[in-house]
Amino acid sequence: MDHHLAVPVGVTLDRYIMHNQNSFAFATGELSQLLRDIALAGKIINREINRAGLIDITGGFGTNNVQGEAQQKLDVVANIRFIRALINGGEVCAIISEEDDDIIYTGNNNAKYVVAMDPLDGSSNIDVNVSIGTIFSIYRRITPLGTQPSLEDFMQGGEEQVAAGYILYGSSTILVYTTGNGVAGFTYDSSLGEFILSHQNIKSPKDGKIFSYNEGNYNQYAEPIKTYLNHCRDRGYSSRYIGSLVADFHRNLLKGGVYLYPPTHKDANGKLRLLYECYPLAMIAEQAGAKASDGSQRVLDIKPDSLHQRVPLYIGAETMVKELLGLLK
Ligand code: AHM
Ligand code: MG
Image 1 (tube, rainbow, N blue to C red):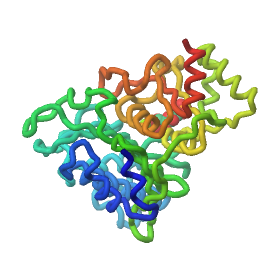
Image 2: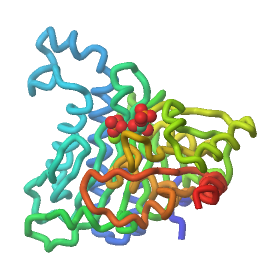
Image 3: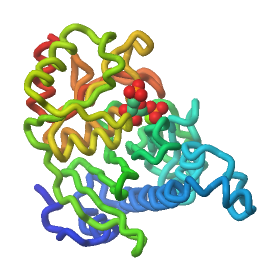
Image 4: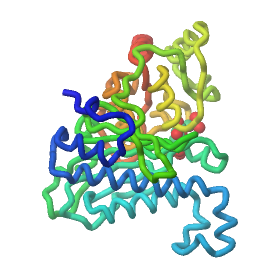
C-alpha cells in the first residue's frame, strides 16, 4: 500500500510525517518525532554551511564563538549540532557517527531508537563550496528499554533499518528519506524555514547513462570493473563524479546512473562505511527500485562486524548494477 501518493506536493514535512504516521511499523509517534528532530538538525547544519565562508570573519568579531565552535571545521560542527539535536529530541538512546570512534550514549535510556550517521559527508568538498550531505540510518533498539544500549543495537544489519535518509546541501537543500514505504524528497524553503514535499514517491529509472567513480583509481580496479567502465565509455555514457557520495547518489537516483567505489590498493574493502553510508543509501535505492551491491551480495544482506567497517559499493539503476555484477561473477 502506498500512502505517500495521498499527500500532495507542496505540503510541509511535518504534515507529511503526520499523514504517514499510521503506515509506520511502530505507529507510536516516536519515530515521527525523531524524523522531525533530524530535519531540525538538517536546518541547523544548512545554516552553518551557508555562512561557512564567513565563520572566520564573524568569529573574529566575537559573534559566533559562544560555544567555541567558530574555529572548528564544519564537519565537527555538524557532528556536534546533530548529536545535540538528537539528545534534546529524546527519542534516541545511542548514536554512532563517522566523527566518533565509539558509541555516543545520549543518556535517554528509555528511548527506543538508535541512529547511525555521517553528519557531513564529502569532507574534501567542504571548504570549496561544493555539495555535501548528511546521511542517517535508524534502528529500533533490541536491548531492553531502560538499560544502557550496546553494540548489538547497531549490528542488526541493513534489513532491520526502520528508516534511512540523507540531506543534500546542494544548489538547494533537500531531505530524502524512506520508512520502508517508498521514498520522498523535501526541498528546504529557507524563507519559510520548512522542508516542503517536492519529490513524491521517487522511482529511479530502470536503466541509465551516467557512471560515477574516481578516475584516478581506475588502474587499481579489478579487470571486470575496468571492462564495465569501458562499456560505459564505448556507449558514450556521461561520466559524472562530484566526490560527494550524497550528491553523486542523488543525481543518479533521479536521472539514472551507477556509482562505484571498488576496492583500491589503499582500501581493500573500498572507502565507504557500511553502517552510515552504504546501508542507508542501499535502503533508499531499493525503495526507489534501484540496486545496491558490494559485488557479491546485496548491501542490505551484508552482516556487519564493526562500527566503522568499509565495504565496496556498486549502487544505482537496476540494469546497470546487474550488468556490472554479471561481469564480476
Ligand atoms: P568522507 O566520509 O571522508 O567525506 O569520505 C567519503 C567520500 C564520499 O562522499 C565520496 O563519494 C568519496 O569519499 C570520494 O572519495 P575519493 O575522493 O577517494 O574519490
Ligand atoms: Mg563519510
